[in-house]
Image (cartoon, rainbow, N blue to C red; front, side, top):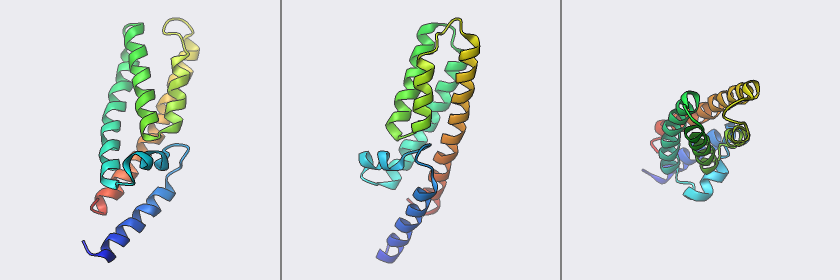
Length: 136
């Protein structure tokens, strides 16, 4: 890739980064660990997306407290790792909800978690699509 083409791709990704709400997906957080390597960030986000979708399914179908705790903790940790701030905060709230009882509280936080997941995965998809289009 020529220097001009590399600069164009870099500037294009800067625009995408600026469009993504850092309260949903803190790309600066992720860039501290990746050195700003867009292809690595895109790969990590793809892995996160797969894991997050799996963990949401496990949370919704959890048969016991141990399964629930592990899935909630896993989604919180992976969200924190890539900078999915809102999702991590909501998963932390879910850690405080008892597995049994408090059904209305559990439903409210699960609903919030699903909404945060949609916002987060929309941002992840936006980033991955832009990186793919720009050849990163």
